[in-house]
Length: 102
Image (cartoon, rainbow, N blue to C red):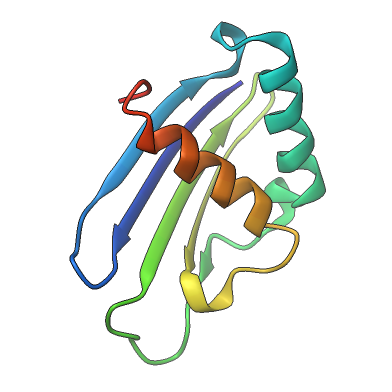
């Protein structure tokens, strides 16, 4: 499974991104990410989760998850992140901040 993550926008407009191959992660880290993908029902989410009007200084997240069976991309505004999706986005943000997955 592969994940491509981009966080853009925010007050400073600094882009943060990561490309993560779960097969190259330690088994516990890979299992945790897979669990967060499943708990978010990621493959059932709509492609766009955005407010009707633009919201300045808010982050926007784009996540693409590719498995051997399917690929799905979700773009979500910070203001509309659900409780089930939040742990996945926070985890991906932390991984992107390390700079290890660019």
